[in-house]
Length: 115
Image 1 (cartoon, rainbow, N blue to C red):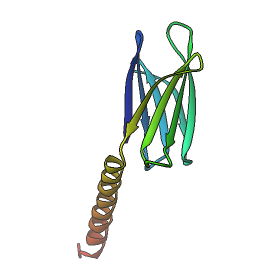
Image 2: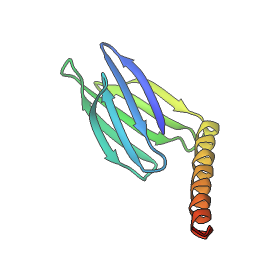
Image 3: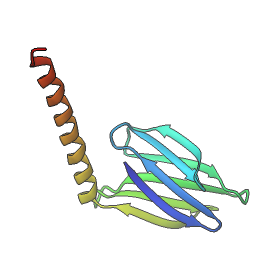
Image 4: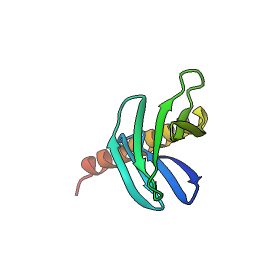
């Protein structure tokens, strides 16, 4: 799970994205305001803020650096660009693969053991 957090005026914004399930969620002040399934290399979430304004979150993989990037726009102006490096993404993928391997090994072991 990747998480980007940013304080946008009086609002606390958090975008969570699962590289395993494809589920993306956006929270404003701890309350979920957007969610979607995404298996492509980019997505967008248009959300309404407490002050009535709108905010656009763009999530994509930068083709030059392979970093997962979250850009936040308000009134069509870029507010910030947050990044998760390639190393942290690869580390999460390795942990996921190891967990799946361990889980499937345990299932196989229990199936082969006599009761």
